[in-house]
Image (cartoon, rainbow, N blue to C red; front, side, top):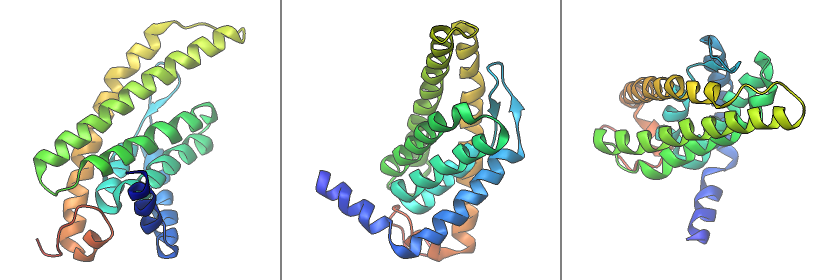
Length: 194
């Protein structure tokens, strides 16, 4: 199993995918920054999930994971939320990896189930990160906000995940029809024109 994963990563991260990763990371960063709805614990809701899902569907778990982690993390750094960048990189990157690993066939049921599981991971991950941040500030002598703000983020992150799933799926479907060679890059194992 470990050797199979290692081979999959090696296959995905070829020289010809580096420009793709760079371009898609830039697009993801910009789309994450484009819409910012502030949240109670000084974070923001955005369109990152759309690109996380799209990248995982289109390019598989490993390339999607890099794009899904780097794009939103860079957005945090650029937008004045550097304290969230490492959490975002890990949580969003793993979300894309999960989607890529769980969604192997292009049909709505597979996509919805795999995407929701990965989305639940993201909501849970940000809840834990929010609680950790609050606890960390308390230990460091910062202001303790309590569990309330972290709990308050669950609804917003769930909404962001649902919107990202819907828009990401629609975007992937449209791009797949407009540019059939896209399916050769991902892990969905579908032939062009299907």
